[in-house]
Image (cartoon, rainbow, N blue to C red):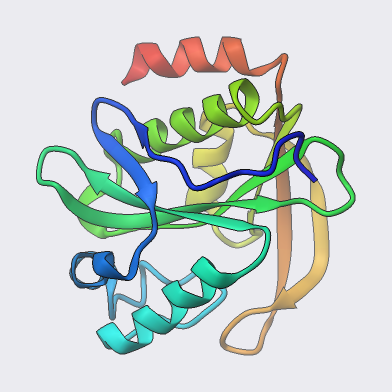
Length: 194
């Protein structure tokens, strides 16, 4: 459980604005990544191939207890380019997880992910009172693991056969964390890079 339960909030940086996920974002989100199997490759659900399928997934996140989903808005265009969430982390005091993150290909290898993580981690430590931010990914998702390490995530281990992938195969999950006292140095480094 986090020190303070996250409420929906808008977080704004230079490149992106994170605002509470709403079904009004679905048309932009579908244009950004709907039907793209590579965008959804590591997600816990198959790629949505219609706005109706994406609406069902988004509605599930919006309604799920312990999850606070954000739409990622590219400020330059005002359009939604993906989403990310906070999750409650049962069994870990004052911790919060950042996950369920995807971005459309047009913003891959851009400042979007770094700024999203800075906004979310800053908010977790400064406003929510978290002492630990957790991130996890499929053991086969090397791109995600590289991005997590880049922002300062420290590998904690692998949970073997954690859950099934949408294709039915078993997923081993790589766990990472950033502690509150580690974050200032990582934040300073990341800010210089963006």
